[in-house]
Image 1 (cartoon, one colour):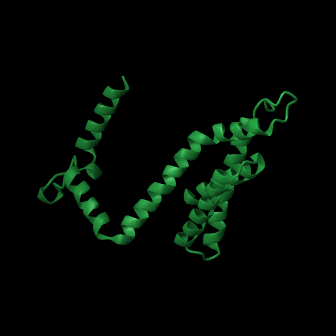
Image 2 (cartoon, helix red, strand yellow):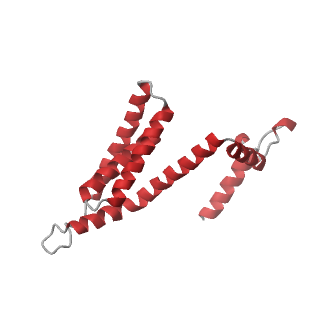
Image 3 (cartoon, helix red, strand yellow):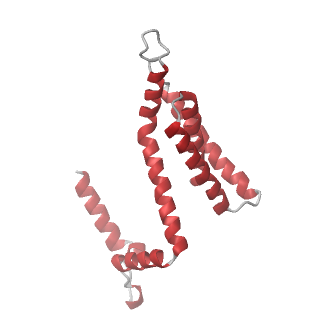
Amino acid sequence: TSESQLTTTGTTITTTSPSAGGGRKGKNHKIGMFSALRSASQTVWRSPDIFNLCVISSFFEGSMYVFIFHWTPALRALDDKDGSSPDGSGSGGPPLGTIFATFMVCCMLGTSAFSILTSAGITPSRVLVYALSLSSLSCAAVSVSSRLDVSYAALLLFEGCIGAYYP
């Protein structure tokens, strides 16, 4: 089962991987996984910049997972509100395959925008600020819009921001 495979793999990595504290020889290399985790936690709590980066990353990645689970129901609900069929039941649903393909194109455009902007001399941290700001605006647009075209464009913008976030 998957639980036994996870346990076996986790134990193997923990006991043999030098980065996880296993497989090291000598007194100076006996850090251990929990000591390394405690040290990393202390670093995060002591440095406001690192702490803020962790919080912002968590919020953005959380919004990304919300996007993953809710883009389909959101677009379907807006398509049903459109009522473009004679009986008012919608148009049979939005073309999800095409929409997903355009999301992937926008993700690649975001990655390309990141490369272009950083090669033009803009720092990666500044590009991150732009991407996070645009993603906030796009999420706000989706949450307040009742129009399918506006929500779809905002979701495309959000996907481009994801591409810039994960270049």
